[in-house]
Length: 498
Image 1 (cartoon, rainbow, N blue to C red):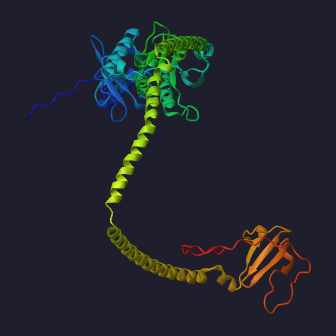
Image 2: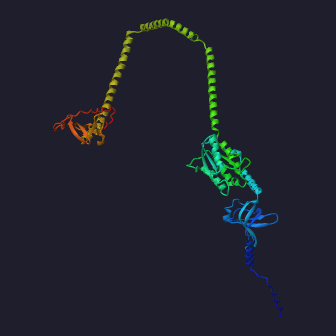
Image 3: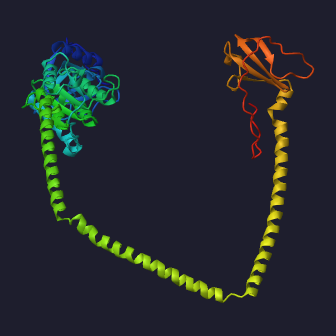
């Protein structure tokens, strides 16, 4: 027979399933450590998960604990975790039953003291410096006298009052204030949006400022941390408008100071750098004007002296004109003698030529010339006759065209041509004025008319048509000026209908 199994000894130890034990431990841990502040170094941070949640570890010299930041909490964190950064995390301790491990669920975190902030700041500074955002050759020159100045600061603090007061003392300028929070969680986003807004011209009616001042009063490293955020530094670097950083006091510095085109130690100093002193400019202009007038006066005196000295070295007028005058007198004295000699020479040459002429030679030459003239006269007469024939044919053709297209043919179809007293065409009833004398031309004559409103009140015929009675007007009207008859166009163009 097989041996019998021993019966288990009775015990009072509670038996748990794995799940029961895991969740019991979870409740115990959460009740014991409902809210804790945990200090440690971030390890294994790789950024948010695809789900938006963030997982990493906190460690010190002797231990490690898992950490979780849910997506909704991560978006609200003022400081984001970074690898190697020592932080103080606030949250609750819980367990993860699926992995048999405990972890802290973080509700908020902050750097562990100024040393951690400085380490983070140095890390960002090295990163941005490696990208060239601090290079001097990329910084823009500030305008000498900006017309519009954009100021990014709190509208209720002393900073904006100091800037406006200093600008008013030195050189009053048009200032556009973009209100932002200069401290707190939303500071960095608002400052970056303000810089981008000024560059996009969305501040007021599309006005682009000539200069931007980002200003804030002094404070601790935590107070100024918004101006150390990467988003602010990159917005300042991307600005196409010159930018002055005036954050904190002279001993304070932030990342925006390194990226800005000019770093002012205080907001008041930023206003002083933005504009010159108006009184000094006026004095300088006046001084330059006096100096320029003196320089011009001395230059004129110098050139006057040079002209006077040069004039003394010139010869007198009599000395310049003496030799040409003498040559003219000599030439005029020889002119009469030369004319007489030339006349005698031509007379002798003419006599020699006349002695060589014979009567028969002259007769033959005259006959040849006469033949040439007669031939030329016949050619001329023939050419003139041909030209006259062509001109007559062209004129007959133009006359026929004129008869076809002339306005008399239009009148023959029953139309009339109306002119005013000056002979100008009346093209519509509205162009006729009450009391105005009109001349109405028909194909067979003219009549005169006087207009009141739009009706003819009297008329008399200026030429009696055949087969008609006397004039229909009893009161003689002043004869309107007849329009000048158009002369036929010698080029054969059609006459105007009007």
